[in-house]
Length: 109
Image (cartoon, rainbow, N blue to C red; front, side, top):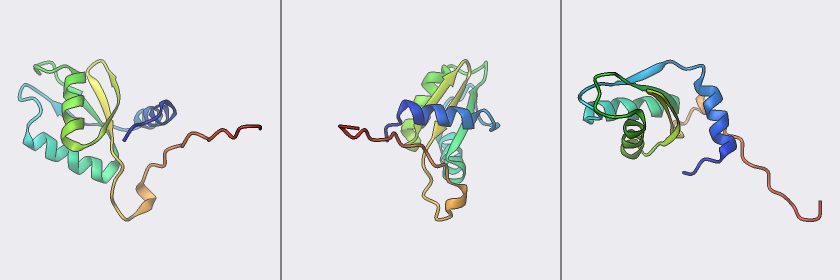
């Protein structure tokens, strides 16, 4: 899944209103954290994480490791915080995030 710059901007805007739910400490990205992130992405699609001071990982390293393990996309990394996105496979469409698709240009218009 490759996000366009417009989709990333939309997701960054949505991420401003969500709370940080993942906290990565000195243990780094382990199986329990991956399971927690996977569950959260399935329920919410967009999650925010934070790397604590005692972590040996940077926010970028942690975000990329989690994204790879959960098949999600890194939307943004700022300081010690990061945002991940993965479309949910839930049947209930009410809770899904709808991303703006770029308009196709038609030649001659």
